[in-house]
Image (cartoon, rainbow, N blue to C red; front, top):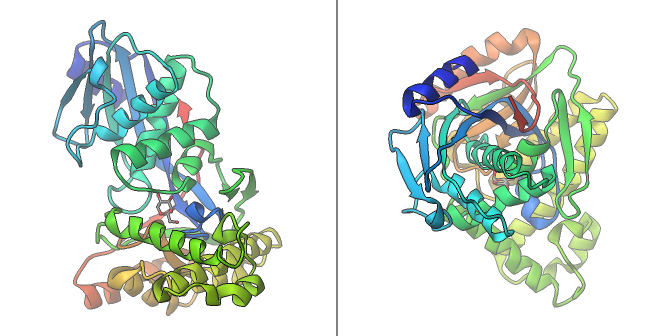
Length: 386
Ligand code: GLA
């Protein structure tokens, strides 16, 4: 939908014109998976698609939530806005953000009419939920003149996800949605939150996102991975008491002390994290040096580690990636995001894209019975007022 169409939909829904329109993007992560909540590096980019939020003060004590993507219309009194509704209710993502503002001392004295529309494929692992949280945080920051910077808005979004969606996610998705920049990827240190914007100039190569159409649902399995990493960290601290994060360890340091991890599952998880952090640092170096082929090899190794050690890929993601690896002109391919379904990200030479879609689409269908979808990623800007 265009912004004009959204404005018209707002008037149709609420009988008045909106005060403002905001946008925040989804993201695709190029490399650095399941490292964020371990204090490691990630390398995501914001996408040109995302979530729009239109709002208007309504002179009542209620906040009205409507979404063009959802059928349920929700009305919540402003003094109950920080109490989550039933698990899975879509407005919880926005209410979780209101709750964070309230926790920081912000007082809402008047209700809003809110309309949402997003074009991030839902459940595809491209951070539709982070886009929704960040657009809400961005809008409330503007409305309430709270002056939080983009990093704070990302933290607000992350907390909303923890407390209202019960996923103990890292900061990557909300950070990319808040801080992304057109044609750049964010090389983010998730411990210090320092970041560098790295130009993604890919001559003759595109970033292709492939959707398994096996919806990823982050929840128990994701939270299990977070816990398994914490266990590994605790056990490593018996020999390295000052260790803050798994991601601090070099490969050599890890090899020296890994015997302290007695739980075999936790050992595999930690091995992935340590390797993935190094791959991410190396990948950024290779990209800066223009060595795309080496970058691609690191993407492939990332997928293998997520499959074998982290065990978050599953048959749909593995099928898409394995079929992509077979195609001439594919520089690298891996799952992206939390895993357990969702999307893959591949670097594909321009001249190979037609064949890539046809062949991977065909063999994926033969292997899984599902249709894949392909999008050429456009790297866009972070949250903004439209
Ligand atoms: C999800 C989480 C992120 C990150 C990725 C895996 O997208 O929201 O914080 O942990 O999974 O890299």
